[in-house]
Length: 324
Length: 295
Image (cartoon, rainbow over all chains, first blue to last red; front, side):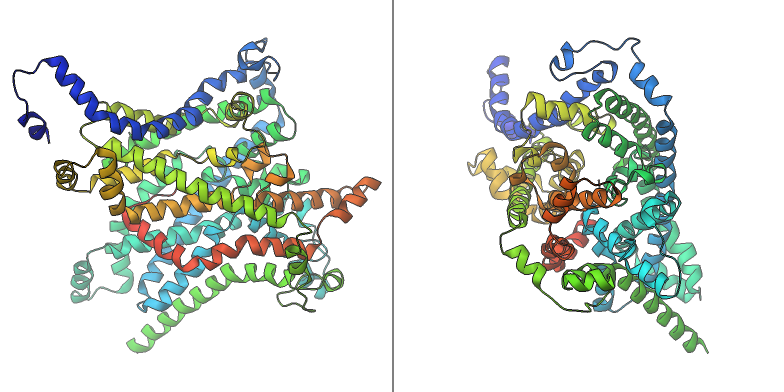
């Protein structure tokens, strides 16, 4: 690489000439990088400076810098943290995320191990295809599916209940049901993705291990316990740690379900509201910039430490997967 | 004895997966069934997995052009195609350049790309930037700009470009090919599998996005499909939950497409995904071997 650049025109060229040459060589690369760097600046860096809105009484007429500072400075935060909503959304976000991480990981591992036992290629591709399907559906489509199941007067579930002489259940006005519905919905959507991911990881395991185990007369369960799981451990750990960085983001970063599935019914907020849906609603419906940006900053700051922690541990365990 | 046991466990595995596969597919069929049921039957018997009274009226209505659905379809297709193309172009040019040893500041620039993973400004500053400063509210470009670059995708592509042997790039240079031409003629064709995988996820993200439109789009002409669906559902939920709906509300309810038409729209929103499904599955599994990790 360097040898080639230096082969031609060695020695008597001045330093500045060489600098100019290297700049000219690099120009096309900078040209190719420009759009990406510009959009990263627009989408990520400029909004970083915008977090000062959280300390201001923002109004669109005066703009970000013209709007007056809050007095006291933390009034927006005070307003949020004193509200009932602060505890609700923080609890819900962590509660659903932990539940999702545990259920998705365990179910995906179990399914992947079972799928690896299916030796027929066509059959296994069919199973994979079926359980992957929900991954590609939008939360709006899933909202429609759920409504078809749970609609009070026409839904399949209530049809069955009333056909058997029961009372129709008002799914969309009772928060308690959603403590169960939401985790199931997220599991349904995501388990296929991670199952297929683990199947790929299992397929990468050296078959010699299994052959040796078979010669030693190991049972199926022993093979799973002593070969498959230990070798999957690094993958499981890295995926889990990536989730640690997203613990403060609703739905582990995919929060749309918490907004669409409950049909934005106010009665269900205690059970379905996460930090992101609160920010979204404050901005879209109430136009409360102060509240929305204060909550957003609270989320970003906690998220910052979570990403740092998770990256620090990943770096120790598996340097290749670390971001920094 | 042993044979019987083995046989039984195999059967159990197949049984588990048949049940799970049905659990993933049947709910979708329910929506399809509702869209093919006559409106009267929906009123009387509610929803069923098989139409009690078959009717294609909903689809006739949707394709008659009386609704805004076809227009929403066009918007979604435009945003998905243009957005995915631009995303791949921008991401691949940036990732490739970041792996080239000639670029002196590539370490610093790589850090610049990764830093936003650590800290983001959140929704509000981005909202103000896009609406007040860039004036993108109510333009089709706002739907595209939000997913134009993703740090994680730059990371994945960068890892891929690293595997391209340097000698290939070198020999192109010796043959007198310029850097940009080398990229388009040699590096890019080699990275087809990773482009396909990333393109797949970006396209799905554009296709399924309703939130951006919900924040930035007011004009009915620019509504993408998913947002149209989402607002229909929420309007109806709102109208039904407000018992004291005023006269204007009543007439608004009459203006909305019928239940069957809404379900038909939903089916049409899934349509392309189902049609392209074999392709999706193939590239998805390919992508796993490249080591793509979901955002």
